[in-house]
Length: 281
Ligand code: DGL
Image (cartoon, rainbow, N blue to C red):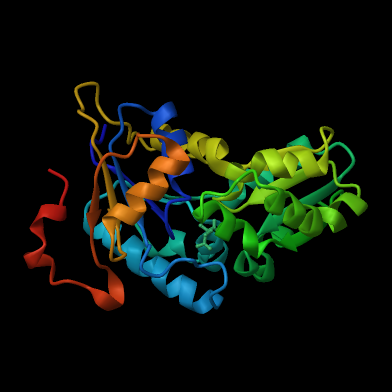
């Protein structure tokens, strides 16, 4: 048994979809969430920069005593798939493996599409992992404007549909029967994406599958919180405004997130001693 929090990290608010799925499956667990809003979006940035930012935030979560790391950001997962597990003693769960596994077991015709940020798609992470299965043909498409729409709270306008039509046309032409939503923000556009792709295409998003991985890891390593644990959910953002994080979180998730602490990590680190309130009690 271990009552320490699960550390969940994303470039911003999108990873809250994963946090929500984890807390639905594991309501007795505490969660410490960091959104690196000071440096988001990660999608258009060079992969080496994303890797550095992600390591800084993950180091910070480990220093705060989390028992597990969840990289709830596809771009960060793609940037550091190979080294996060070697760097930390605590188990690391990311979002690409679970989505790939689900896509592999979902497709019937072996034609799988994947959409994501420019960074995720150009890293080739999804294509490599799906490509391990020789039965599959993979079609990848970056959809950079989708994140902009979600962050502006626009999820169902004619403009979203027009942009979705444009991005998704090659995947429709390729006759994919399964489409991986390889970005934390895309589940919020599921209506438009499903409308454009048609009812016969299965959409795979990683939040609930990632939560199952978290569950499996906690059970197999005897890390579940004890029956007397009092779960706490703490949200931290690295950007200048907690209000902005809260505004977006409320728009996307309802009123579940009630309080956001502002923190600084990595290159803009605060001396830890001057910031003691950050530790979970
Ligand atoms: N969280 C990012 C991802 O899943 C999307 C937002 C960003 O570009 O930072 O790829």
